[in-house]
Image (cartoon, rainbow, N blue to C red; front, side, top):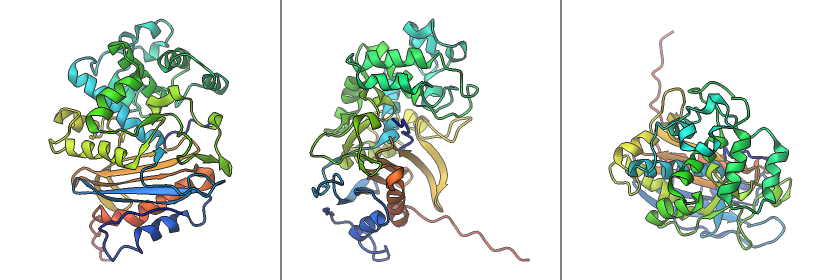
Length: 371
């Protein structure tokens, strides 16, 4: 169990310049070289559209079945912005409020939570500024959820009742990355609506955007599998399904793009899910952190102009990257079916380095100064 969550094939045609180092197939194959990663995939967006995608490699390293363009990939914590969008949509509708204290949002847990957490808000939970540790401190307790037969919502409450007894990782208002914060926000949505997080995501996020491939937890048979330690990962090396709000879902690259394109369109008044002001809140750096709601918000990335929204995701068996440039509604989505120990991160970052010149502008050169 890692709980990291930060974060032969077919290639479709792309409108890339001749200046790009080789064709897309070459970029993807080159990214796999020198790693143990079985497969890597990319989708490129430009000017508010998905202009193409590619995939190379095999679904699992013990069989020759090639990864395919419509396969699903686990994207780890790169799904956190989807959880944040769900909460934002419920706030827009009046079912939740950004500033309601946690003890009121989850009265069934109020009596057992440490006093430091009682006044934490949804904004603080979704921007990693609630003082919460990364995860519950007990690995043994976490492992019990692989065999828990209760509905995921009930499992989440049990997990949270335990986690809210842990000492804070730091003061409220200061950035400390936390999966627990996203589970708490999801539980608040479940309490407010009477529906499970999974049902809410399907109704409020996936259905309006036409995202039909999404599933919770690990991928099924006949799909790419996560890899760890040189082999296909076991269930116990992943995260249990109840962990979905922190980023435990899989989907096709095309469906991932639908969400990301809506996020970028929202900054231009064209989003389907949220009010324009709510998109701006999600995608603008908040006090005390380099994040908006779930998104990392940077002025530049890898020498290219921003603003840019970023996230990386991994459960130790997969690695995924997203970089969005809302100003031009362009970006890259990349996923690999191996964790860091097998070079999934290296493969994804190599694809990013090769293709970012196609979707972003270099930072202006710094004028030389006279000696």
